[in-house]
Length: 288
Ligand SMILES: NC(=O)c1ccc[n+]([C@@H]2O[C@H](COP(=O)([O-])OP(=O)(O)OC[C@H]3O[C@@H](n4cnc5c(N)ncnc54)[C@H](OP(=O)(O)O)[C@@H]3O)[C@@H](O)[C@H]2O)c1
Image (cartoon, rainbow, N blue to C red):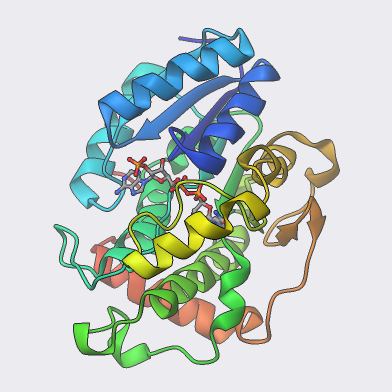
């Protein structure tokens, strides 16, 4: 077993996730990259090793929109590493079309919300066995575009599907997830925080509509770099300033205010209960 701080980053082969992994590897951390493509993951792994001169970079494959894939991936990590110090739920996307995951969930909901929810569920015992005990969820200022939640249609049936609406909702759910989980894990001394990384030129938008991805490409040169986008994730993973912070939302390495709807605890609890039921989990964080 590797005797050092292990930080897991999902979506570490591209954009903010890759820059986060590079920055943390440069600080000497052991990195587990969780990616869905062996080829893209391996290319990024080599780049991270080259830029950080740190050989302790490991790749695990997972489709983060699939319950069974998350279960299998976390089983392998448990067997190989035995613990995790920090979990960074970063992988996310916007989808131009209404599509379903193999579990029958609308893809944005399935990846951006359920992916974070399930990966954390199956990793909690590993985090409890670690030392640093931090969970970081990459959310977005896009949560500010939500003014009401379609409770009776959380999966947004295809007729009502709009890419930005679905994406913004999923990023609001990241904030709800952070708030409730922070409360639940207080007694375990595990902190849970979320962040907006900035408006960053990355691979983001590629799975949006043609119009959206073209817009991102045109605007690209005016946006911030993934290196800048990684700063708050790295800060939350490593800084002693945030030892006691939990359940908070950060922008540019500072605590920031979310919207009134994002601070609504009844909504947060309602989403939690609905997600538990959808996922078929009997007790969160308890892996049979
Ligand atoms: N860019 C921004 O301006 C911005 C602003 C606010 C928040 N964010 C958030 O930042 C996070 C990172 O986004 P980014 O900008 O770095 O975008 P990105 O460059 O597209 O990176 C997204 C990562 O997620 C991975 N991913 C997507 N679907 C996956 C799946 N089913 N299973 C496993 N991995 C999957 C991608 O893998 P592949 O390469 O295989 O597709 C990629 O590694 C996201 O949560 C996003 O919502 C971004």
